[in-house]
Image (cartoon, rainbow, N blue to C red; front, side, top):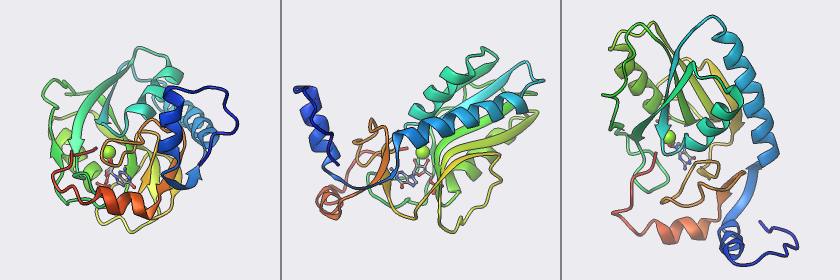
Length: 209
Ligand code: 5GP
Ligand code: MG
């Protein structure tokens, strides 16, 4: 993917290199922003009568999405709380283990809770995080994901707010990473096979979420 005729150099040159790793853009930045706008209206309406809504944001992946949602909701009753969760370990397939690193600061008893995640793949992450939070007696727990992968969801959990479908491929961008790269892309795309093949040789890669 090329950025056309940019007069800039410096940091943008590195951006060029990163973008050259993308095989195909599957969701454009414009589609993403329009969808976030729609989702924020839906969330605003559904929670119109609530005075406080706790929003656990599953890091790192959902951070960009949550920041954009927060900007649009622009209401202090929505309390965004980062929660570190990881299920991939640097590769392109889920490990099957979901690790919830931090929810102890959340006081959700009797509260409306809306879990925000980047992408719904096997459903394992949301199922486990939802069960974990429901055990703390909130009023109710709803779920919101930016992307839903077109695959069989082994662990089905009801999705209350869904942004856009993505193909059943490993994708990066808009918060989604491969070995902690590509999160800053404003679009979502697949990686060139040679990028994955090379990178995957590093077995002790960072976990991602
Ligand atoms: P699940 O538990 O539903 O299988 O996967 C959910 C988590 O795995 C997501 O929150 C996301 O962090 C990660 N994930 C799933 N699919 C992809 C993908 O295509 N690309 C990236 N970068 N991460 C993914
Ligand atoms: Mg995630």
